[in-house]
Image 1 (cartoon, one colour):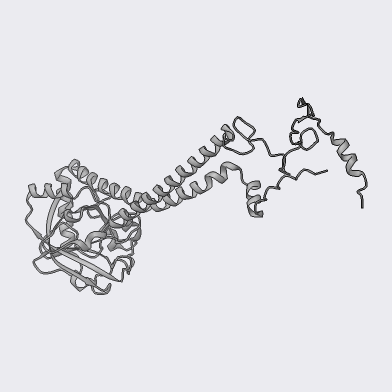
Image 2: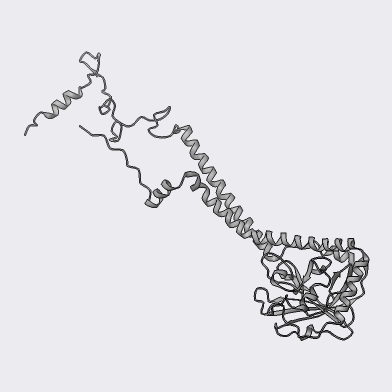
Length: 376
């Protein structure tokens, strides 16, 4: 008697896959890749968002400084300017040190006297460079904590209130990961202008000299007889910081109308090239993720539709309308009532031509017949 063929054994998954399915719930397996992608996008976007936020915050502080100076009143501001000019007159000649290599000593009497000048507000002043969209607050000193939040005035140089035979040095970072600061100072050219506002007084300077020097070469930061100079200093090259970029401006007459137009031109600060590049990378990554999610969703919907609708009319062995029953000769066909399906027996005719009903052989008789000895 022919035995029914056993059903195919489903293939087992690899061991690592089985462990993952046991240890991780389905929702976590599905969402984990998406979460990782989103975390990567957040890491990429953080410097861009932090830089834009800090730039806007520094511009806000600079604008607030000007508003507070207008509210102070001319008498107090005049006293501040007079005191600062006397400080510059009595400034002792001493070597000017690189702001990034030499640490200041805030506990010395001389430094404490310096901090008492232009102290109406925490912010000493404001520097505006229209051509590179810079509008930043100026603070006392060049301590690391100071340069991380804005621009610092170099202790030992003239206070930025103008006057003959004065040379003020204003320093700022380049390459700071969360703020632009003086990153674009390299784009300044001769004859460009910048503005320094201190205690209600706005001074206009025109660029007359641009140098790249070693940190120890500070001779060009000394005072020049009869000249009113301000030097903007930052590290260069970008990311290397082995040298110093010095942009020196000399005071020129200020036109109030032109100054207002330049101040408006300084805002807002545009995105830098590296920020735009990161945004394009993020857009590309999110586009790929969206395409993958759409393809996965489409495949899941198609699979669910097949399971819901069942096999189609063209499926072999479907047993539905239009489907074909399993072939009796197929050894893998299922048993019917414990017996193999039998082929139909044709009707036979007797000698008179009348049709007689077909005699269906009994399976038990066939089995008994198969047990009889065969003739030799």
